[in-house]
Image 1: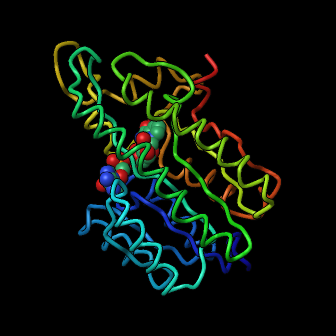
Image 2: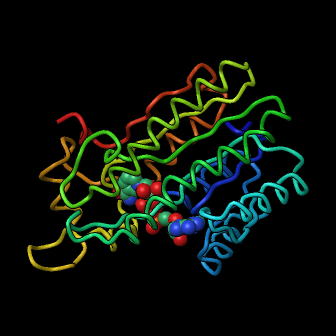
Length: 257
Ligand SMILES: NC(=O)c1ccc[n+]([C@@H]2O[C@H](COP(=O)([O-])OP(=O)(O)OC[C@H]3O[C@@H](n4cnc5c(N)ncnc54)[C@H](O)[C@@H]3O)[C@@H](O)[C@H]2O)c1
């Protein structure tokens, strides 16, 4: 049976864990050759090995322009083309904005925004050379509405949302065949929550996602990485050929309330 992204070459950043890992696994299962990148090399290698022959892993800090140049050159050397970029790597730093250091604000912006900018800048030329492609930028419900103790994170995810639309229009204007969309996950169970302060008052414990989801999510439950990977797969595939500049919200209704 034909896969939904047969023959495509995909690059997924932050693929050693959580949502990125699920995206890499889903894309490979549907026929893509997938290059996984991350800074957690041991985990990333393990995930790529688990996927099998269709996957390979590269060390890649998305905040470094030199690293992007090297990764894109490697993708070109190995596969000769790039059809799908999933700009997924991200960090979430919680806590009051009044207590956040400028260094932490900038670190979060470097990963969540600079990383997406650099991915677009260095991957789209290779996509254009192959006649087009699909860029999927990982935003968040926090890119659609504010959340207490997440001001810095909201700033980065809001930036990703509008950056996506501007790049989508730029590509469409030159008819390069490159589509650019953002994905907005709600509460998804991944290790990122270990760094988002939101536990019982006065503690730095990670939040209880089940209790939080029951209270805040209209569907009443948290999501899992595969929920997001299914949406990314659709955006990566030709099934979404008429979709660009769009926001795919996968959040159990969280943002609607
Ligand atoms: N989990 C959620 O509830 C949720 C909700 C909305 C949006 N998101 C977004 O989804 C994306 C994936 O997050 P996740 O929940 O899977 O978290 P995660 O922590 O499981 O995965 C993030 C990955 O990004 C990698 N990473 C961090 N800094 C990097 C860097 N400088 N260069 C390369 N890789 C780097 C990490 O090593 C990790 O493997 C992020 O952009 C996050 O903001 C997550």
